Length: 191
Image (cartoon, rainbow, N blue to C red; front, top):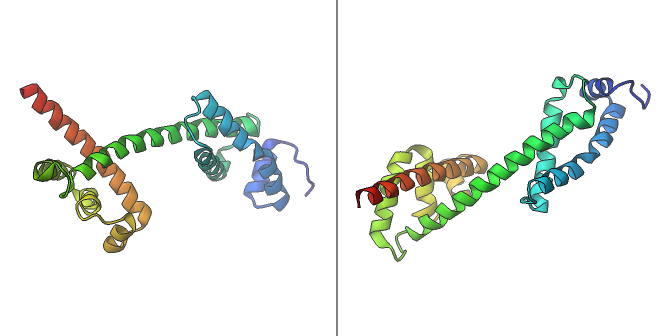
C-alpha cells in the first residue's frame, strides 16, 4: 500500500480495515479537531474551559472512529468530522448547564442535611420529594447527603461502578429538582 489514497473514502476504508499507513494518514487529517472544537466553542460564547474542550476532542475522536462505517465519501473527511464537532460541543454545553443546575440543588440538599440550620423540616421535605424519585437514585442521594458518604464509598457499598453511581445520582437530582420545584409552586399557588 502506498502513502497516498485515491479518495477520502478509500482512506477511511483502509483505516477501518486496520492498515497502519491509513490509520496514520487519517490521524494526521483529523489533527484539525482541537482547532475545530475551539472554533465551535468560540461560536457558542466560549462557555467551555480548555479542559472541557479537550474532553470534547476526545469524544469526537471516539465518535468518529465508531462511525467510520457511515462515512460515504460525499463530503471531504474534515467536513464530515466538523459535523461531529458541532454535535459534541452542543452536548458538552448541555451537560455543563445540567451540572450547574444539579450543583445548585446539591447545595440545597446540603442545607437540608440533619445538622443544617433548617433542621428536620427541610430534611422531611427532601425525604418526601425523594419518595417521588424512588429507586437506586433516591438511595444514592440519601447516602450522599444524609449519611455523607463519598461517591467512592457509595460505589463500594452498592458494588457498582463509580460512573454508574454518579450518573444515577445526577439523574436523581434532576428529578428531585423537578419534584421540589413543583411542590414549591403548589404551595405558593395555595398561599
